[in-house]
Amino acid sequence: MSNFSRRTFVSAGSAALAFFRPDTLWAAPEISLPQDMVSKDWVTVTAVNTASPVVAMTFDDGPHPTLTPRLLDMLKARDLRATFYLIGRRVVTWPDIVKRIADEGHEIGNHSWSHPNLAGYSDSYVLNQIDRTSDAIFKVTGRPPVTFRPPYGAFTHRQRQMLYRSRSLPTILWSVDPQDWRRPGASVVASRILSHSRPGSVILTHDIQSGTVRAMPQTFDGLTARGMKFGTMSQMMGWPLWQKRNFVRTVASAG
Image (cartoon, rainbow, N blue to C red; front, side, top):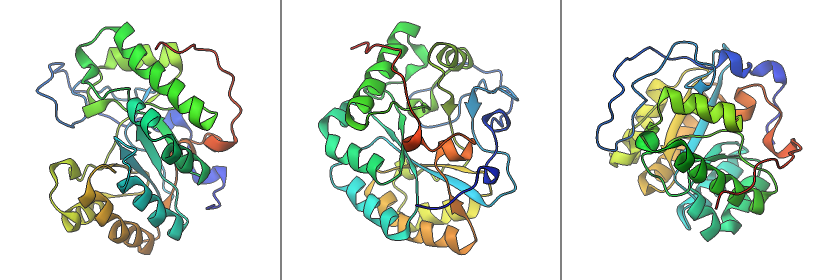
């Protein structure tokens, strides 16, 4: 496993970088940053304020039965760590892949149960989506996720605060979006990531896209050649490594 010191990373309190955007209306589902971002919102992380050459590779929407194992092989060959934001109903379908993700030192985050646009739903519906997923991940790995990423980025400021108060889960967004979900091709995905990544970047990708997985060797090797290290979200925020934390279950499954 990559050897990082705590000094390599900063605390979560320094990690939320955003701009105030007053429009709270949501368009048809597409992946974008929320439109009501607030400066210094400590419950929302888009990037980490650090001068250290560290980035967080994050993969959404998995696990995928064939693409995720291919991606894990690439990461293992390079001794790199990433964060996987998993969908609950996929967790229960492919638990062996979920266990492999955790066993190989990667972090698992919560990406809802069925990937709805959550911005227009009630708090009870939102928490049901999140709690069912946390419970599924806990049953497979023995530990719950400690961060949440909303599908499409669709989560209002009020919802982000509600989730943090009720479940202590910060909302993790991103600072680099190669728009791989549009399937622009592997070379374009890699080029966009390499062009826009900076120290502290949180990079959004999707391991259910074959083009994304094909782009990763060029991406990983290109970032490494620039001196970048790879941290999980917990490491980026100065928290203990996810696999080494001791958890006490306090929230029962909502499903």
